[in-house]
Length: 89
Image (cartoon, rainbow, N blue to C red; front, side):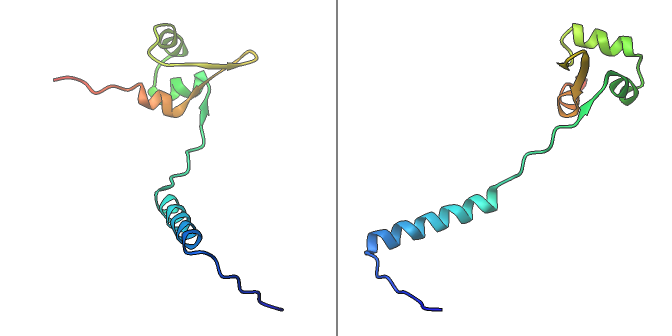
């Protein structure tokens, strides 16, 4: 195997070093996104120990957000968890 050496101008070497540093910073700070977990109405009702009718009422009141594909209704687990609000004392 033959090695070829190329002398680059200092400004290009500096740019390459800056790009390497930026990539290293991105690697350190990159957080992969969580995969969305979809729940059915039945799963949400079991999660909170309530009737499916209650889940339907929460959706109609805008308390929780539903998503639909075809005739199926799903809830994103993270959105359900985010809809919980702390009680004020």
